[in-house]
Length: 241
Image (tube, rainbow, N blue to C red):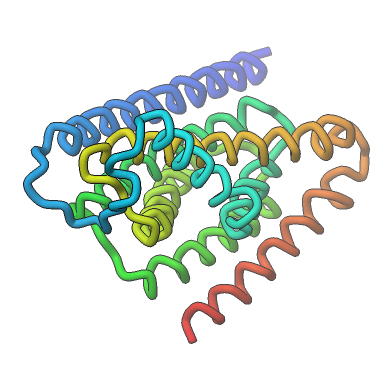
């Protein structure tokens, strides 16, 4: 009986820890984003999209929303594999959402900061790191079966790296100077829609119908995770060359 009580206490403590992590991450995100948003239009370090500077606001929103979605589905195969790997840790939707939240908060921070050139890294460093993040999460799916506090922290750190990758892609298109925040928020919203589509696809087509099967772990999670890890290793070497 005491062992059962201790188990429940540990579970409650873990849940409290997760909530504190997410809450503190959201606070940091709000603070950093506020700093960026309060910065005056003195320096435009990003590429300028002159074609959209005179476009109506709803056209700008629609353009960057579509761009954000397309950067995940169908063009962002590396980000798709990362999100799929996040979904395979266990069959609880809450576990997926905790990780997705940490990832979203993190990449939103670096996307905004990178477009202001407050935080930047060359793509030669960012792209191999993104590939390595895919390997790490996929291998971890094989080694652990429950969400740990440090998994949230690691996903958050990887989200920071992925945000730099999103910024590099967005910088190729450029942003209108007079609608900087409108366009960057729209792009980020598109990215989130793309990620949600991937999560729903994996959950509804794989996790929900198959998670109660005896062979689910060995027949689904492990093979898919190993395949994702293999692709990530290949991409890592390819991007380092």
